[in-house]
Length: 401
Image (cartoon, rainbow, N blue to C red):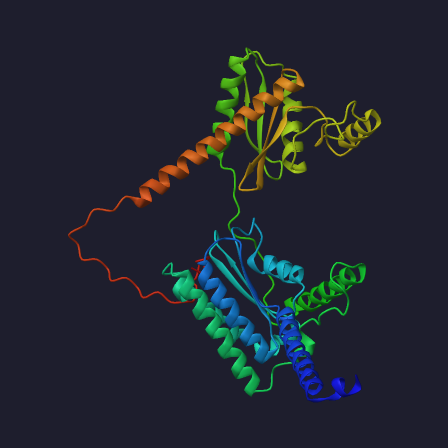
């Protein structure tokens, strides 16, 4: 038996087992390297072709393996009224990765290149602008796949230059290590939580490393006098169909009066209540009514306390039904208050006015889009030669591509 084990066949078997062990070891190393790779493309806005995404992810992970710096490129449909750097910081923190984060917003056509604190030396402002320009150059031509490829090539060139200048941190300082526990366990969740917390801390220092803080908010929606008047007209028409005479108030997002109408025969006492309903809806960003909303029956003590507080503060709050906020593109731009019927009737009239405004806005946008698609007739006068597009935003232009 011993001769068989330690004979030539035994040595061959031992060699085979050793070879399998070695192959298994290198296979495990390769799998671990793949799991350590954090680079990714999250194309939630659907800007890129899936094959281009797959090829670019492979390129990013090769760059990460050489530089130790992971990169995430994420696209979103909209910034939802927030600034591009604010959304980028939030998503970068959520990613749990510490490296380079590139955010692309489809609707606002904005790009933000965001390095974490640990790799900021490799991505000074001029390098970040160069990377943005690389993406933007092709994006403005609607060549999004080409723009992605060109942007990633610019990131690779920046990291190569940073490596030569010894500006890159050790890979262990950038890439979160693989947890030494089984996936799905409580310890695994804790490790992931720790990694995310570390990324939050890392990206939390971003605003202090060369980014100009946002001092104003652009692109907000405002309710005009014409819009307020359209609400009044529609609300009056709806009240007439209900055979009611009411008071109607329209305010802006801060509760300031824009327009008011008192229908013939409306109760004078309801003038004031229509105004407080409008102000409540605008400033509370919700329909007016008993609190808590939807409670049956409502909290009597809470509502009386609120009414007393409103009286003490000048009467800018009510728990009566009949106030409806005006919401456009996710922003509250005003409020409508109606007084003269029951609370439910007032709310229906106010809502009819708001719905009429939203329908008119949608109709105007369709008309504007159709007009923009209509080719303009040629003129006899010599046309001014178009200016060459550059990757830098022009003064007053709040779009990147």
